[in-house]
Length: 461
Image (cartoon, rainbow, N blue to C red; front, top):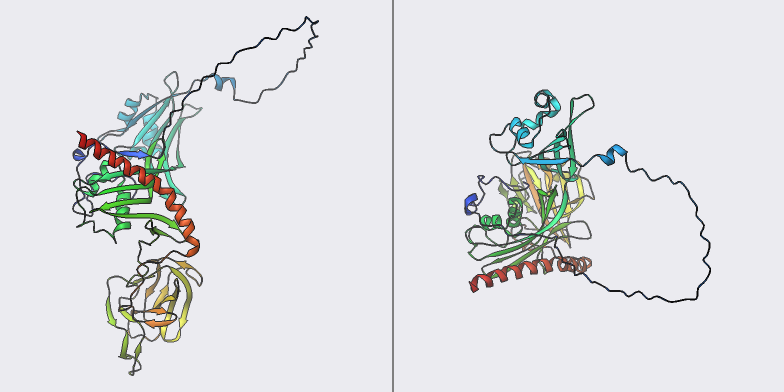
């Protein structure tokens, strides 16, 4: 999800919706601050020194013809810049309506837009999108542009796409699809909850995607369904993607602070020396649990850790893991960040993956039908990443996942062990992390002062 959702769309939390009429004036601040420069005026006195009269020195003149660097043709230099008209699409608009508002009266243009395959996207009129036209000093069209996709997530980042129509030398027209990378900006925003989280976010002109990301980041600390109170505040630093002065997409949260019931929660994005990124509070504690309890969703436990009668050998033996019954092909996810230590076949385990985690921790995922495409020994995986699929390879009577949790290579009960709450920062990362926090804290503190000054102003009234 990028940018703002339609105001009529339903939010996944019951306290979130607001109608456009309920929105008060936005409070939004960009990182670009304008500074006034004071001018210094210096007065200089000219000093004349009288010297005895001397005969004038001879003056020599030389002339050389130099070629000036090319700056365009004389016609281009004399051509004034075109006048650019812009209009936003309204509900019920037709292409003819847009051309009329823009002052475009090119003969044959409407016919071309109707029949040319390359120009068909102009008939997908999205209310709120922009159409522009450039006209020369005689009122003739230089180009027509329709920004039909102002922000789309690509591998290379957020891209803006538009249709461009130009007249050609034959008094006809050409249509081309253009794209350009949107510029990333860092923005800050703050808000105070009076009725709902999304109401406060709308007041701050915060994109819905950023609001939802804030809920995901702090969801393990704050119950956003039950814990929110009137007067709770948030301060946030996030990425926005801009094109032609308009926000066309949102990136990710860089840092935030949330005050809930007088308790302050913080988060900052940090990428460690191994290239693993995650959110940490300002003290350096990870906001993500180090291990998930289960590797597959929507399942049941078919065999627990401990002594049991082996279903194939019919002998009592120690069961060194937990079995999760699930249909063949059910996705298996890594329970923690780690490195693939082993991937392949091991006797009774069948297809198995062993992941090495921080410290002495490792996990094993056995009886898989197949592994995630391209996964190999030495690859780094992130918590929740797909690593394989449930099967019944090895010593198995039916499809299930055999999951083991190991400490110093010894199996322990994953349902009973005290899992690490969060992965601590490595010593080598602590200095870099401190610099990251120091970078964002002044912006968070500036937003806090802004909120406090507003409260003081209202109290004075």
